[in-house]
Length: 412
Image (cartoon, rainbow, N blue to C red):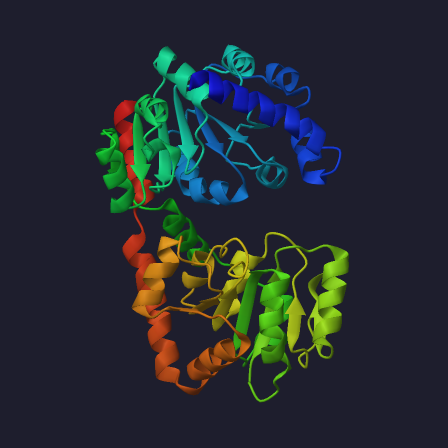
């Protein structure tokens, strides 16, 4: 199985070189790694101990961020190395102020892993959620460097739990510890004979709770939002926008809308603006403030959405008509009841919140319209759903503290 894994990694690397000719994202992924070992070697490291954190992309970074920042506070004398697999994380967070060094993760080949550890000598390694790179795990284990996976979430269909998965299970046993999000994940590991694990919960809850406490002002939106109920539609795809358009055009529904599409290419923003028609503005075109008569504001800037939910009354989260919904917790932390499409069942937080009454899956436009009207026309229902959302976040906080307490023990 090890040979097959090495072959898979090699094919992935060669295939990415071919794909880079056609995909700008893959091209950036390859370009970011070119000459990277020379840049690593040129870094002035100093003599303090080094902690290494690795995230796949921006979403996993936001999940790991509470732990990184709590680690900085608990271990001020440590240096922090942060690596990313994907350009979506590296390009946006390459200047992240809480890390001393930010790089792409070298590819998981024996040669590249060897060079990585010739340059860096971490005393602990922390991988966030789904990042399982077995040559890195093997080297960390052989060097006796403590290694953790945090906010892990396991499913029965993963190869760790298949009849052929013995080799993969042995790789997990090389980790010092695995912090999982829920009991189901822990049960899977225990059934597979993997005991180096415990439930911490999901660090995303700590992250979104911190966002809710952080003051963020949008003075240019004051005239637009003041005195109005707002539906914030986050990370929408074209199928989501089709769902929203009849609602937006229904003047009988007293709502304003902030729409933050997942893809902000200029052509898509222009097409969406045309589809909406009247009383619509685009964020980048605002001169001083949004006109009070504007009904729809389209956000075409990355990094604003989590703060914009603060302005909302309710939210629609995109992705539910595609591969699956995007992050609902950034809206829920502000007490916003959330609507989303039908593909949400693999997201435990969405399933639980729907069962509690704070989330509302929809399959067609009429269902969305009726759901929104019910919240607007029955203030008690809206207030109740909002309270459920806030309580949900409050109950789930605390994973970061559990992980930091563990790190304090092993690094003492």
